[in-house]
Image (cartoon, rainbow, N blue to C red; front, side, top):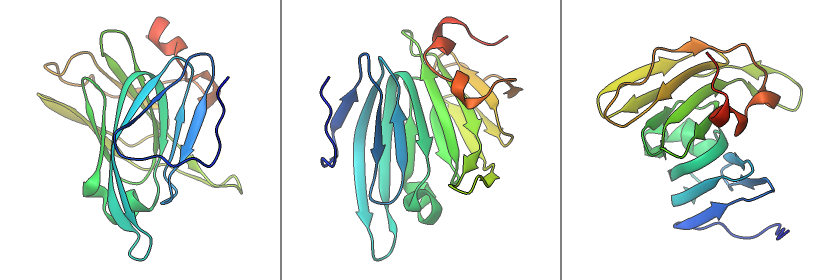
Length: 175
């Protein structure tokens, strides 16, 4: 039941959840939501509000984490590195979720980015393992990266809505 608001998140911090969820809003407007029983490592966060440039490196190691791009991804996207145990996600200013199971197998789902007026856009991400890359460019398109030494699966369009994305996907993968 530890709840903290307005605390500083720094490089090398680890975010672990048990029965609760948390959300981190970085000063560049990047937002990361961490669901129950998940683990996220903040490898690096550097941001200059004057130039709106910086670098961000995150590693989701277990559970489900949702990522929404901020200014760093819009202005220096080559400096954004989002990883799981089996995949690297190339961000092009958009939203996506990562669900990682006990073996490190990672399911990445591209999500629509919606503002407070309900206007949504769909961006694009690349998902790569050591041996292959796929591009996701449709809302709710997904790929599965079983190991770092296997290519990401061909993109599959899931018939789900955002409320269904969570650790349940670890137990019941869509077919």
